[in-house]
Length: 301
Image (cartoon, rainbow, N blue to C red; front, top):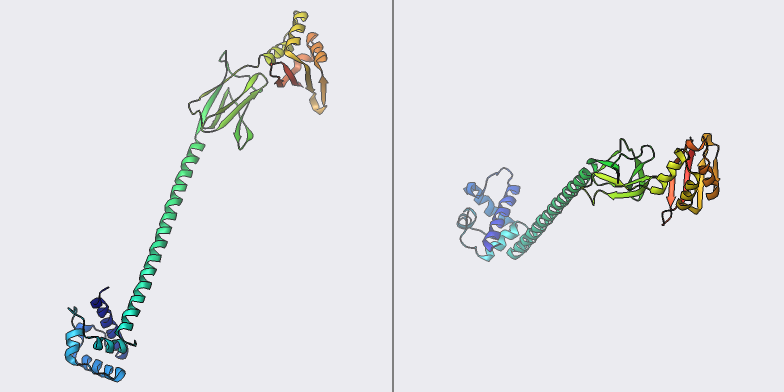
């Protein structure tokens, strides 16, 4: 800020001080009358013990613009009139005020900038969350089918789950179809199919999950449901598909508990079938690495 600009501030301060002394005056330097000039001269003489001419006031205070700065001794007088020691003190105080005002404006600008940035970041986060939620909530229908025959999967015994945070949540399988979120991770389990896990987020093009049959479990199911024709052949086949340490658990109806069978006991039950055997339903099968069955769970219907 130039010295002339600071002088304009001094003129304004003098005018405001005069208004305090003469409250009835409500004008500006342009409307400052001869009587006002006389009042000001008298006021300055009384307060500052210094004299000021009418010409000086007409020359330096009344004009709206000033081409040059008045003498410093006159500036000192009017600085004292408004309560400061001299012109240097007025300049110092004025510059301090401007610095504070600039600092406040700068602080306010920074606050506004921080608020704007915070709102902007918040809106971006909301937008991203909305996009992620939208993708997550979008549904797609997945078909389940047998790998070799393309038949529908065996109902009631085929279970599907979505995996969220390593936790499996069962979902409905209806007419060999499941409905899941577009980015879900799905696992399908059944005693008669090999377990299949599919990540739809990584493989968005998938619309069908193909299940590979558990051959030995299907052969075992055939033994249970069919009539015996060649028990010797059946015995040889059981020897092949059942592990020597196979464990068989048969869950009894009406919460009566369960029965346990080893390989020989269960094989004998299959070789010489009974009416109760055909009412058994396989609900769980576990295979060893060589595909032999190591565990069977059945329910007595």
